[in-house]
Image (cartoon, rainbow, N blue to C red; front, side, top):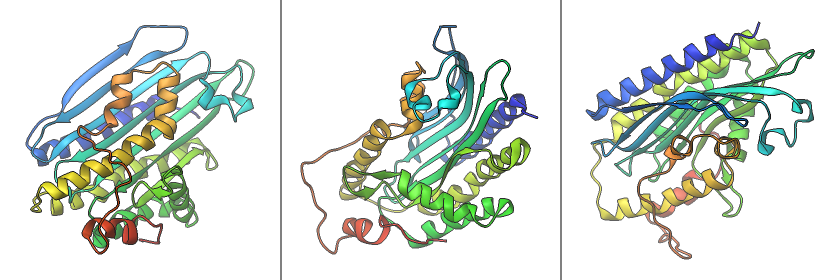
Length: 303
């Protein structure tokens, strides 16, 4: 049985748990911005954006919940799914991006979501999606291994085949084709997941969402007080440019939100607060910055 209210209640609780934990570490609370879209022909719904900016630990951290519905799907969602034609839909999820102040703390992204499309006289079409990925600036092998092992453990109860499949999916998805390089060291990514039935698929999504703090918080606590200088901050700003490029060119959630008439302020809260681009810049061979490209960005089995 499809229970969208149970999914909504879980997602709101997950947002609470994550923002409470990060606010306690930072010492600054999240600002809560509850919003509601006026009913329109394209999209209706509501959400709760939580944002922390200018903190001691987080330069910008956003955790958004949204629950929207509409009568027709945007092109990015329906182009390759002919069975969705003529269906109304609802989509809900929690999505977060943390941009820490310290360059030795990786940026992190996590998303868990549910999609349901219905049409009178037809069975509903539904699926879950989500995952999490880590984007270090100065890589640490122990951190990368911990992150991936936590992701792997979250999927283990649902089949040994899921982690390698979702890990590869993540490596392929978070890849900047125009740059020929990965955005970070990956994690797990899945979409259109419905093969284990609604209850079990929902349970898997919850397991991934619940694993986020276990995967990221120890890294944040270990690295947040590491000394750094202008050089490290400059490289952090340069690499953040890759984050912007991916989100605006490739990210399915960003494209779906903008094309369906979603709330731009909430959709674009994933953008870093400061970013730098340089023409044809290359890291110095043998430098810590170069190690990111040689030792961390190429896909490997971290778990």
